[in-house]
Length: 420
Image (cartoon, rainbow, N blue to C red; front, side, top):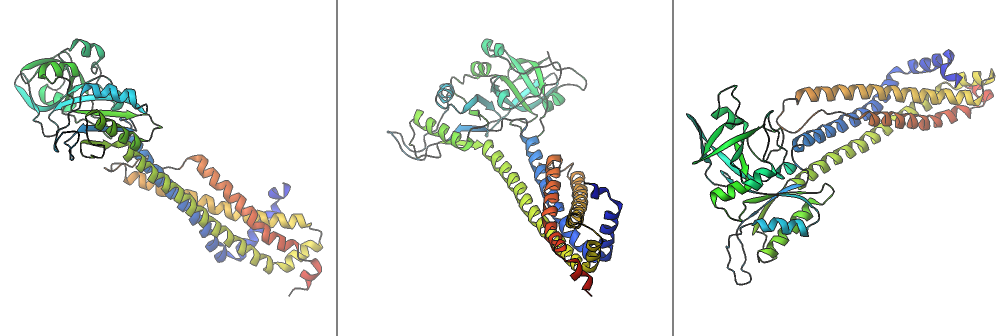
């Protein structure tokens, strides 16, 4: 190891590099470009990954919606065009017979899917908003952030069918004066008075509800609006390790069986699968990361081979110098180590410059996309990845340096001294 800290060793290395500045710079750029591509593409993929993590952080990853539509095939004595109506009993059946399902939240709404919003009044102020009948489990699928002092619907509200309501941020702004605390106040929804128990914050990223939505206990909605066992649609979350696409197929197949629908009728029940969208997006980001790794390593390898070629030429040009060193007592190991050290030095310098350049580009991208509408956040490369790339470069630099090093060692002193 002493030769690494030997001043003469580094003088010879820098002397060799300075004799072929242009050729060395061009070759080093090849390695620099490889690590730059790796850092830039990996960071870009990570930014996309972070962006979608942020978008989906407020909802369960494997979440989906299922609702009733109309049949497109006659079956078991029923005609085509029969309207499907989901029931509360369907919820228990799905939970008991599909083990991959973690949560199911039945919902019923006014102001969605073509329904007229509900006219709401407080004092002299009024507006029309969406009204949802919900269970507390809904917040397991779609997180609801509540302003301080308030809360969401709980089980006691359900059991007692209380006339309580949670309102959205925009509803509060339009019905209450600025600085006024809405919690505990009463508002009239249609012809019925509800006590406000909380105000929901508008969530960043994916949200199943707007800031003009209102939420009351499902049992209260059922009692006041005489909806019976009917539900509008189901919000469903499968376990994170479940196949969201297969779970969706199993749910619709079971519903077709429950409601006596032709097993081939794909139109009887509609669905939207956020889990499938999330998995596809993450797959794209993973593919981009893998592509950056392959392209980066291939480019780095090409650059390192270029460095090996330069050193071979350098060894040929320094044949007489190496012969003199051997004649003066330099051992084959000393000559070999110097050539390898020169190879590793050029490779690592190129790698560090590539990392700095790539980090600079990622910082610029982060600045330009900070306020962008599309899901893209904090494009960075994890430190272990960067260190791993440097280790790979050191290994490649060492291996490629062995070729010119062995060529230098194989030169006989007497033949080198005769070289003109």
